[in-house]
Image (tube, rainbow, N blue to C red):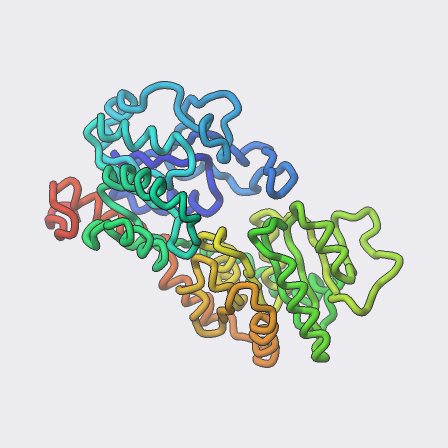
Length: 416
């Protein structure tokens, strides 16, 4: 049995568990610390409460662990099991324990208890080597993560910068295995195809002119996401005489500042979605508010590109995977974890973080080459960034573990 630990059912992970269950070669259970966002839950960064509109608990085996009162995915100390995990692991017949990082104490607890129970430890975290570390934190970080990584048997790498991070901690190549970050490509492609026939109506509903180049920001309106950078780049395009329209999907603490910096032509969160006065000197923008998983494809279809201007805090940027699976090209900051993979693909673009001339230049070039054919983008993510690739790695590594092989050796034939 492979036990997978997760803070809560995450919309990007649940389809992977469902794919692993359909594959059927690895016996597993997902153990959750909380059921955050399965029921209506408050998200501090979004600044609102919501629940995902997909069934987050169907199609795979799972259980909810007993955790401390007040546990949420962002509370380090509370998000842990209130009793020893080792007996639970032995009772379940666990051979390996997979954790999603080290951002809550429950993951540290699981790693130490897994070793006490005689289990292997697998890790699939998001961290990369792109973010600078304050000098005084470096020795502490190296010591603590060094202790953590010494207990990990197999590292599942989501991308190039993530793999490089582990190698800088001395993890050998033989323990690093590909598990690329992905979204439910088929669902997003299907939803986009269904919404695309209504593209003109969707744009009209949100006040996006037919002849405008529409750049989409999708995510939390928080500092690390840098949504104001898109406004600054759009202003430069306006000064150059280009007709550009911004589409903001989401919410957060910067919502007021964004609206003040734009000519708001539609605002789903305002009682009066059509402001009484408009300032033509500011970039035109539409604000849809939070869109759930079955609604978000409308934005990917309405826009002409996605912009991901985030800083180092964007350890990957799965919104870019969603956009590409929907046939939408992306412009990505080089500080994002996905930039080395997705930012260099045909039809996409990468720009130096916080470089407004460069961002506006990339947008201008993309606007001149529109429309971009959706099929190559969809095919690229389907082939290279899919759950199937990660499932294949899990199958292979589980078979190798059962054969009792050392890291890097091929599995015995009877388990393949």
